[in-house]
Length: 153
Image (cartoon, rainbow, N blue to C red; front, side, top):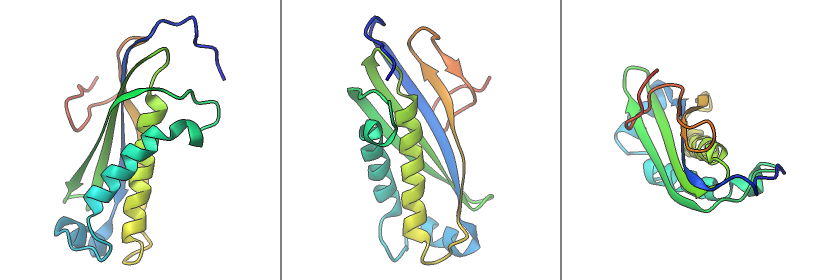
């Protein structure tokens, strides 16, 4: 594990995104909130939040951090028959929360897959990536626009 003890704690935030392509069988069921397994949006949101909190247990050498906020947003895209997932994680610490945001998106997407796989196993999880981080030595880095307030550069 990298020694961050000499780095001052700063307010830090990371935003990650991913997409789940649902397809023509699954998309209408998700849109109409009519999945056999129940509330996909609530389950995926909670799964993402819990995953962010457990990131150091999942990613080797990842520092345990006191998370001040974890948000997971899910937004349907009818044109692409997909679901976009965005996670926003905040802390005040000596290292960033990029891994927590990425883990939240990944586990939320896996939860969507699990809840829909009985209908169509062809669902695809794609494009999990960091879109923004703030705080620390590098300051603000914006890689692309987010669902909720990031600016595209």
